[in-house]
Length: 326
Image (cartoon, rainbow, N blue to C red; front, side, top):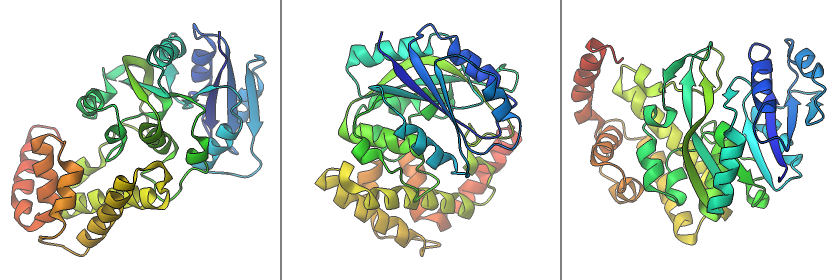
C-alpha cells in the first residue's frame, strides 16, 4: 500500500477541526501522513492539534502568519511521497475518499484526480446533493479532459484533488497575482496543461458551508442588481486569470501563449469601454466558442454590448427575484 501525503492548512479552525481530522484518520485507506501547518491561529486550534498523538500526524506551527496560499506552499515543500492530497479544516471526508480516489488515479494513470462534493450546512445536513451540478460545472468536466477544463474557469475543487508530485518546477512558487487564481486552481491548471487529469464522479466530501468559509458555493454575481457590477466582476476575474497566465507562461504551448496575451489585451481594453465595444470579437470567439450557445451569447452581450443588455438584465433580475432565486 503506497503512502500518501495529506496536506492540511489550519487557521482559527477550532469549531470543525476535530471532526475533520477524525474523518481523515478513519479512512479505509490507512497508509498516509497527515501533514498540518497552523498559520498562527488565535483560537484553540493549536490546543486541539497538540492533543493528537497518532504517529501519522506531522504538525508545524508557524511563527509568522503566511496567509493561506503561502501556507499551502509550505506544505507542498514537505511532500516526500509520490502522491499528495489537499484537505480543508472545516469539511468532513467520507470513509472511502482516499481509497476510491487513489484507485481512480492508478486505473487511469492520471497525474491528478478530483471528485464531486456533497454540499452541507454546519450540522452536516445536505443543502445540495452535488456541488458540481449546482455550480454548473458537470457538463464542462465531462466534456473536456484537456487544458480547456481548467482554462477559463476552475473545475477542480482543491479539497477533492489527489495528485502526483510531478511538475513542481512549474507549480512552485505558487502565483499570487490574483485572488481568483489560488493554489489549487493553479495546480490543476498546470496538470491540465502538462499532464493528465481524470474525474471521479463520486461525492467524497461533505463540503461544509458556514459564515467563515474562504471559498464556498456563493455565486458573487447573483448579489448584484446592476449589470455594470456584474460586468466589472467578469472583467476583473479574467484580468486576474490572464495576467497570471502571461506571467507564468511556461506551462502553455506557443499557440496558447499568444492567445493569453491577446486575451489580456482584450479584457484590459474592455475596462475602457463602458457602453459598447466592437473590437476584439475574434479573441472572444476563440475563448468561448466551445461553451453552450446561451452561455456564449450571455457573456458576449454583457462584455461587449452592456448598453443594449442593461434593460433585459433588469427584467431578468426582477423575474428571478419574484421567483425567489435572487
